[in-house]
Length: 372
Image (tube, rainbow, N blue to C red; front, side):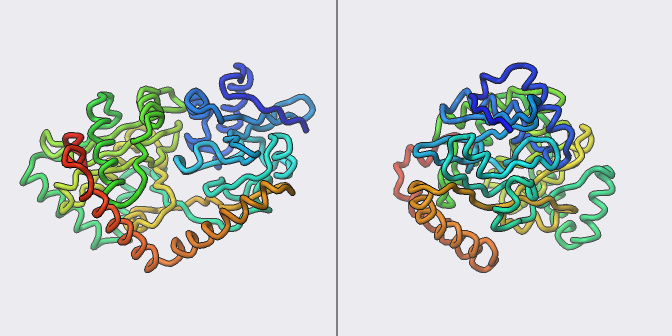
């Protein structure tokens, strides 16, 4: 096989068409983070983005979008920013991972949201984890019936809070595919504040991420687009979400809500309205992403799987990278796999966030208007 590495913008129209054909042909690749449009956008913003074009007998059989960093260290496209990685290829492509790394000029490649079971990566998987899904293929009424049956107490509580919110603040409605920039700024303001309060890195403090989100917000085709949804009580926005979609799947990316309305559980309320609108717009599923949020457990009616692992070729770089990364990854997995430790870690991060916020200047605490 032949592996050629190019920048995304160097792909020609036949290659773009082939990428879309390969992705559309496999249900396991039905994720917008695997779409060529996402790779092209990220390639315009980050100089380290590359695509490996895999040919067999002169025919393109696969694409691997990735990041090439210093010393031959490779990462999946979007790495920590995205929730799905993979080799976009013909089914059962027989391409050993180390051979692919050699063709890409990489010494090591870490992954933690890889499409599980791909032959290239499966021998190197260290863990396979479930991703909760809202399966809407049978329609929203069928889906909500299962939620009501499987989690009657949770469902009744959310609907009670929704009626209370409507009585006190106005009719509940969801705006699907909101196009205005102001709604996006409200959502990212909430999310930035949430990151700070919970001790996490504020994604939107990085201008290139804001630019990426704005570009994705403006995109839209039958097979790929950004979807901004906002939940209102009367004329007041209370919760929202920005994600990406294919022709069939909406993937969760940036959910947030106004903490002034936290007692009404607006985030969960928003997810139910979002699922209803997704089904009405012809989407078959909502991918909520792996992670330890309890509400996902009772909103889901299906799962897919992603894997974690590491591939390396013998080198000093790979050895140093292993010593730096493996203990951290093991510690993270221990926390993720134990709910009590996950809740403790979450409380510690939130405590750190409160301390950090209290030390910020007052002018920073008050902006942007309407932020979480």
